[in-house]
Length: 224
Ligand code: AMP
Image (cartoon, rainbow, N blue to C red; front, top):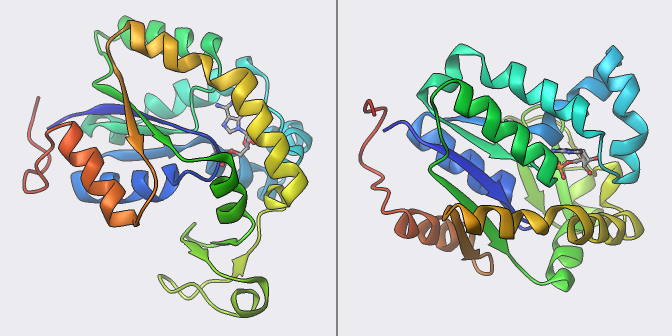
């Protein structure tokens, strides 16, 4: 079952967690542009040096850089089995370039899943979020207990993301409203947009996504 999905939603709605679950289960490639950028920053690559300030402040990296990064990634072999884009596109120009790229290859999107929660819940979740620096596993907890704990998935170190400070979270929410929310209308016009309520447990949200798309968890890697 080759599928090509986009996960939309403000920071902190659980896109990364849901993308990981879906892609692990169905064998789709999980493409998180935020993770790609953070890795580049961590390694100090030329791309990392170019994007560091944007990522740390919660501002959007310029479209041309993002589009080239994603196009190269989507041309890699593993994406032939399907992919989930998490964090891309974030602007209408990025979405248009993605459409053109897929069109050139005779491909299209199967759906755009937008996970929605209130801004207050975003602030609440992100200010308690710790991320494993090795595998990206997300842990929600309070500062004191989580800082010294290890990743329950791989045993790696848990750390707070620099952009998860309250002021930066609020800034990222504003950036989302200003630049990314217009994508909803863009994908509604293409009949691809589906809104998912992001409140409740990870499993409850996952089930909502599967139900909405009629995806059966017992099928794996069929051809399209
Ligand atoms: P995320 O992990 O998706 O919240 O992304 C973290 C940061 O990476 C964002 O605040 C932006 O600075 C940058 N970023 C990730 N994806 C994009 C994108 N598609 N366009 C522009 N900037 C991005």
